[in-house]
Length: 190
Image (cartoon, rainbow, N blue to C red; front, side, top):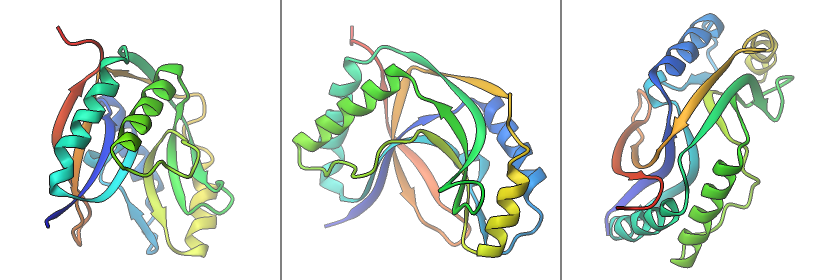
């Protein structure tokens, strides 16, 4: 059976994408062990589904749609730069997303709906963020983490969330390619 790599996400506005592109340009000093997220691929992941059977896409989209019906549109705030596990030696550098009750509720409903049809719940606590890069080298991790500490403090950007997207992701040598499979509007259907 065909497998498709999928995830559920919130798209970000072009103005924020441009801000993040400028931060990437300022931080990218030719580190060899760093894999930068292409600016056009930056998004807020709600749930990574991994490789799923192609036949599971429609049931997953239905469960996501049922969760979205009960969620009103909301506004998120992107703020600050951070790292996992920290900026002192990060493996990932990200732009933060301030937690919002609407986001927490939506994600919980998506988890519940997908669990009801057999998808595993995430074991890790949800930490909303926009991944800027992944770091493989310890030396690059320390120096890039130090450089990133000066970015993003005090700068915020609003993200109006009125839809969520089920994406297909194809891994390629030049980076992932994401294609929207389903766009799902938040709120009751008329």
